[in-house]
Length: 227
Image 1 (cartoon, rainbow, N blue to C red):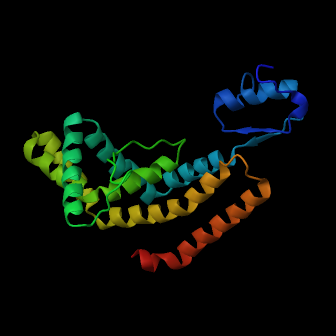
Image 2 (spheres, rainbow, N blue to C red; image 1 turned 30 degrees about the vertical axis):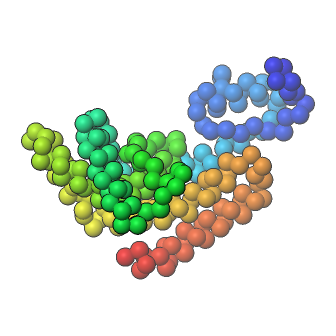
Image 3 (cartoon, rainbow, N blue to C red; image 1 turned 180 degrees about the vertical axis):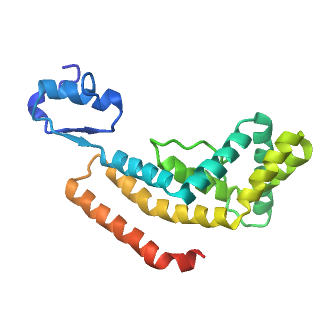
């Protein structure tokens, strides 16, 4: 009533699976169904896609390793201290200044913005994509800042910095990181398309098929180029 809406116009309802939305007693789904039995519920396709990503990533040992054993310690270590974050910020500033002086970066409004190492969130799977991209973009600055931290901080922090550096410089990290970027780049388009307000079910299903085909092509033919 507040928004001049009427149940006679309801054709369905759809959102994520949080308890305040899908709860069987006081969830929005139940409250609407109590008033309007024909309001068929559909779990948000974009959210289902993200939940699938999370479940598969946690089940795969390589994906679990890069997120849990490499990225999480890196983000907690560097992001957990203003002083250590300042090391990274300064190394990145030096890198940008040098690249600009060599003509390797363009200048202009919105370009060369400061990047951070934000923590990813399971309910926003795109945040994992952004985290990996930022780590790869800041890769040289991260290694330089970890070297500096190892030199000036206490023994405990120095050992942590060296351990993370060792992981980041491993072949396994670089291979899995670039593989995940390729996978996320394919699924990101589908995820964004599923969240459009004007999306229709036929087009959405067609895009699912295209995404599956692209992932299969990556599986069949993408590894040589990745190597």
